[in-house]
Length: 165
Image 1 (cartoon, helix red, strand yellow):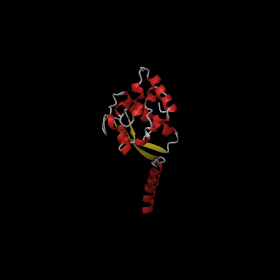
Image 2 (cartoon, rainbow, N blue to C red):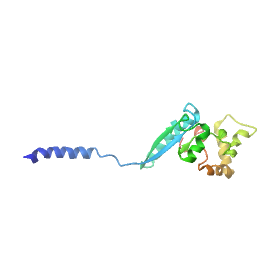
Image 3 (cartoon, rainbow, N blue to C red):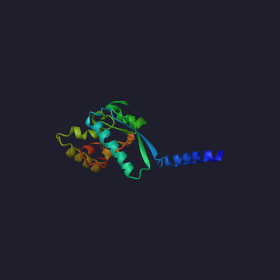
Image 4 (tube, rainbow, N blue to C red):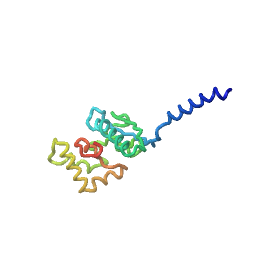
């Protein structure tokens, strides 16, 4: 008799366990992204509102084998605007919102956009000009190697030229 009482229970338990199997496991990728500026500034807002969701979407559409576990540190939570390159260099952040004008001591070639005797209010045009320089002057990109980072391309999102925009 005990078998008759436990059989329905075991059947229900088995059905419950089969119906609540987790989806295929995704390999988590922990990433910390940092900006010395709050998200009320366009560059930090672009990271939060455009870059992070675009990376998540790209990963999902690439098969979904991975998922990024973001730690988002804006508004100087990890360091101010002049600390971002160092935060990435020492491993406190994986991605940093490096602000070129305050990093002239380690990235002097990056000042090109700030020392030319002309300028433009058109962000797309300025971005295109700097991108063209990066392609033709390899020293611009090489300057980032000593601080163990890739050159910045965040401005490309504002002009909608980067893949993640």
